[in-house]
Length: 64
Image: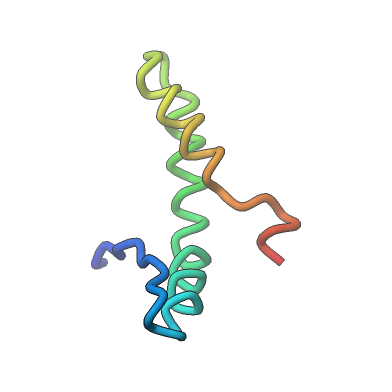
C-alpha cells in the first residue's frame, strides 16, 4: 500500500480545494485509527500526539 500525501488548497487552481477535501476523506479512517492507538499508549508524548490528531479529525456532522 502506498502512503498518501496530504494535499493543500492552492488559490490559483480551482480544483485544488476539491482534491484536498477528497484526500482528507480518504485519510480520515486511518487518522481515526492512529489517534485511538496513540491515545491508548501509556506514554504522555504519544497521548499528546493522539489528542492533536483527534482534534484534526472530522466529527460526524463535518464528514457528511
